[in-house]
Structure formats: C-alpha cells, structure tokens
Image (tube, rainbow, N blue to C red; front, side, top):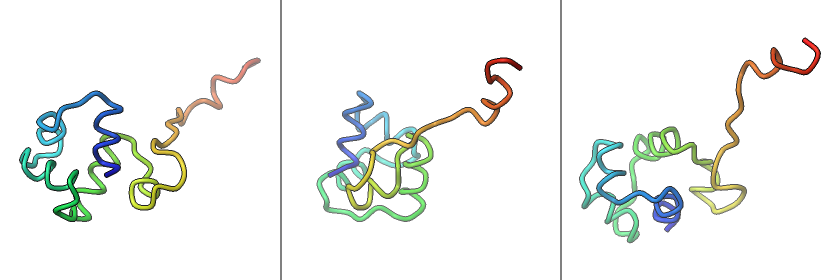
Amino acid sequence: MRYKTIRKELKLKQKDVAEMLGVTNGYICDIERGEKTPSALFVNAFCSIFKVNKGWLETGEGKPFREVTCPYKELFREGI
C-alpha cells in the first residue's frame, strides 16, 4: 500500500508514524496491509504531516510528495 511506501521512503517505523498521528501501531499496520480503511481525518493528517500528494495517495497517479515552496520567494528574486 502507498502508506508503507511513504513510511519507508521517509525511513520511519510504524511506531514513529503512529506517534506522530496519535494512533496505535496496530492501526498503522492494518492500514498498510489493507485490512482497514483510514478515516478522512487520518488521510488529511497523514498528507499534511508528511507533505504527501493526496491524489497520489488515493490513486497512485502523479508525484508522491507535494512540492513545498516558500511563500515569500518572490521577495528573494535576483535584483531586489
């Protein structure tokens, strides 16, 4: 499942993800094995904390991680 892919990419243990999201290790394990469907709240928190593209998480299309940009980068353009 794509949740495990992200966790492995970030070199995290199930325990780490569970602690960060306020759930049990068992819940993470069940989601990764496809035995449990995560709640909308869980999906949104997972995407927010790990900067994951929700579309990719749900469908596998696109890039796994959102591009994070600085909201003030226009202030730092060359020549200002």
